[in-house]
Image (cartoon, rainbow, N blue to C red; front, side, top):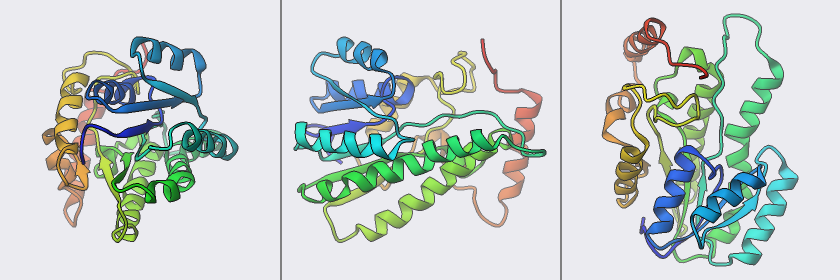
Length: 254
């Protein structure tokens, strides 16, 4: 993927990985349009990055997706990169009854959201000489955290969807890429400076380098052992990984 001269739409671009990549790609000379539900946050990010644009979007609403997509194509006809990044990560305990409302919101945001946004823009992207659809999945798509069971499942499903869509688009000019972050020190859970979390600047630097290649998955070196783990013997790493989190929990809240 070329890293300059694109018009890029990023969902969930007001914080964390989304904002970090939006600002990095903006500095490289791309036209970047971010989205989110809160106007104040969109205004703060665009004010800090002159030339960056914003569109209000709620990825849980099909009406919002359709409206934002029409606005995008009208105002930014050169759009050639869609970066599906919006998502959230609550803790859960699936050893007992689950919160059905939370589960539905999580699946709608993390899985249906990117599927619907891509569906709304895919025909436009096909008209471009070079186009890319990016999905933010997670290392948890390959080795789940038991305490984020539903979140991990949405990311595994998104990885599976990306595989199928990549194959079905193989004869078009649209490339499907996947970013699978490790634990990055952002406010997705709680920005804590925990040494187990990858600093955001390091993640952005390594991810940009990976995106500059033709690899379908832009992953950082830190997650390669976990990315390679699924298979007949995957349970051992899964058990060891989750036991380590039981003994040294991820911080929750301030």
